[in-house]
Length: 114
Image 1 (cartoon, rainbow, N blue to C red):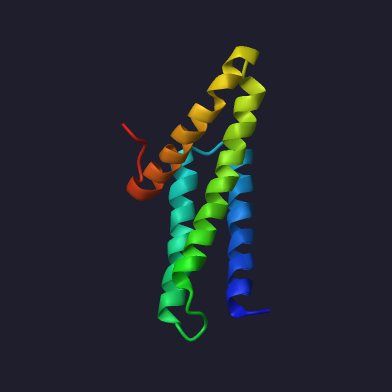
Image 2 (image 1 turned 120 degrees about the vertical axis):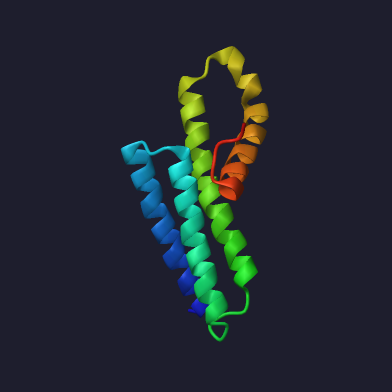
């Protein structure tokens, strides 16, 4: 196994464990997203400070970001499907775009969009 694979898999495991806490404890979205950002930035800093380990730091950061966002979006979709009425299902694609924006905004700004 390459070092990048080991780091990626380990970080995904950490993100998954934190995601379970987010679900079980009913944490606020900003708590989940800001903590995910801290995990990803911590891994990114480690890699940048240890360039001999791997050279694809940007790729790894994107993969981890996408992984954590997809986990979060899957939960949003599950909640939406559990609470939706039949005529509201047409709005699901519109909502998906909003939640993409919502996650990105919190990730980049640390607060809810206004």
